[in-house]
Length: 129
Image (cartoon, rainbow, N blue to C red):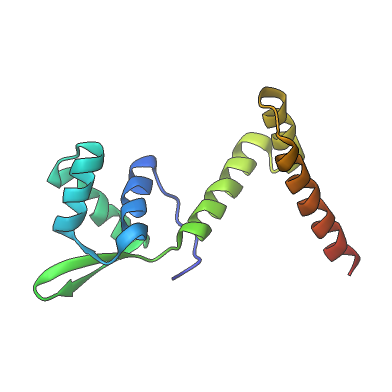
């Protein structure tokens, strides 16, 4: 899968989740799943798949007379890109501002704090190397 930048709308994320779970899927299979999950019509799902194919998020290939879709971006890369975009847009790229804002509203457990310390220690060790 590619690591190129693809910005996904919330609706496209829903379709990608479906494909990340069980690709390749035919257009019919995707429309059935999205009907069950979101109540979307066939045309809504097919329109989204077409847009996503145009922007390079998915590939549609003919298999036995049917078009099957698969993601071109892995979930981890898409999530990282979304996180970086959010951090830049909302916090001007400052991770510490974001963490500060989040921890003012939500209490962290001892395990979460320990996990954050472990991440910071690892980053510090890598910088020293």
